[in-house]
Image (cartoon, rainbow, N blue to C red; front, side):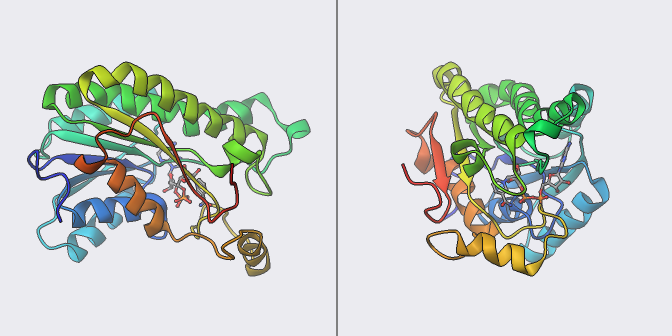
Length: 258
Ligand code: NAD
């Protein structure tokens, strides 16, 4: 089955997609496999170019273009969106806001600069991309927006994801709900995914013992793989999910059940 093609081939914009082990890269790859054109965005422009090339090699005929962007900066977002809509890529139909950074800093040690940085990348960045791209989805008559929250928003965090990150990722849920209400009139759906611990490089040089302990704390006794989160994001971007909006989709191996 090929998603995204029933309404004509559309472009999926995916942020935070340069790391070949990351959720963003796997989401971009999956979109390409499902017949979407892809705009692959990351602050690491060289990494984004490399990731785009990997997808072109993996998916025959895939239309994938890489763009450098700092999602926390409005001018950077605006100029990148301009470049996307003036490129050869087809009409934008989906946005997967995946760029994010962790915060291992204890609450009592938080500086305002660090707090602002964590909120600006994890929360403001999602707002900026979504606001800049929504008019093109309205114009094109098809729109799916998926924001990336975290189980941290629900249970308050752990070793790598403390208060500032929990606040930003909880803000993503409010952003999702507000946008879902306001954009429903255009047939645009807005949802959030809230992953638990995922086997990516976001935790930097975390050692095997720590990674194993994180896995053992999950009822399903393993970390998620990035492709599992990607599959959910791409389904939420498909025509099949048309009646789902404003929802938080927990994908955490049972680490938060309510
Ligand atoms: P990752 O580090 O592989 O991906 C994050 C990407 O965002 C990187 O490619 C990075 O270069 C990019 N990025 C960072 N700051 C940016 C900016 N200002 N502008 C543009 N791009 C920027 O990590 P991942 O684990 O794939 O994380 C993806 C998303 O999933 C993040 O939002 C993260 O908070 C969330 N998440 C991850 C986990 C996990 O355990 N890995 C769990 C829950 C939620």
